[in-house]
Length: 354
Image 1: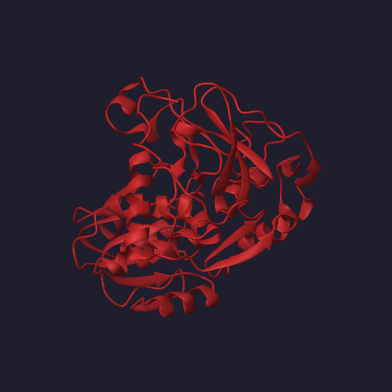
Image 2: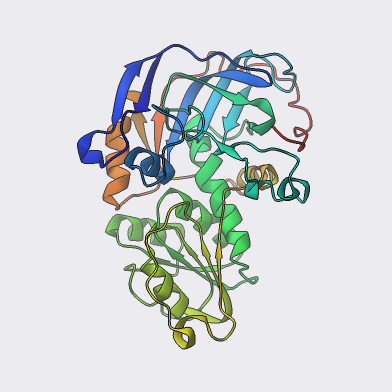
């Protein structure tokens, strides 16, 4: 099969990825083999390629927003059958036994594993996934639209919950890429007033088109104090900017897996009046199931730019440039059967490990 691998993490200008021929993977126990249909292009892929995230697997295949068609399975599988369409997210496995897993916080498992970082992902024609960590996808969402939902959408949903936005409140969003533009739609559907602060002119235009009350530069102050804010941009210098824009008692949720250094904070300006800063780490499988149901019910649709598999380098360069309108998606293949009789996917997988 054809796949992209991270040869040597470093700046994109040094071409850290190679497009190679490699064997089709074999599914292990509890894993299904997928023909990749689409794969979203996420900022985390950029962090893996450039080395912002330390390498965990030599020559890893990036990509963790995968829509695929089941074409095979390893021993012990029974949740999906050949021809099922499934989604592969960032979270790939947890121990199922630690205190975090047993208390419903599997996203904090110290032994968690991730698609496109610990194991090969979706910048390829085929991939595998533990079926316990895959999602049955709503038929009403097409392959291209579904891909960004599987990380950008789910992480944005968890970030919105962590930000503790009160009903009808004012939400500030710093950075406006794939995750942020989906979170904005979700917040607007819930009756929030959304203010976007981002560096890209194209991203600001998209924010206004989606219904944001205002869209300004990343370092600007919103027109009114914010009841909650989410920082999607991996820019630590925006933490004090966002905190200073919060109303008393409000929360800033930092949604990225990587963040540059945060400048010194002033207690009175940034933290007093019971302002809160919280991080967001991955997601639970329940987060994904809740969000995908909401996405179907609310007809959330990402703004996407489609690329061929061999254009993955161009897609990452566009993301790195910063002025992104929505989400990039690699189109890898089309379903072998567009219309088919489907059996129910069955109940969600047992939460007891992976």
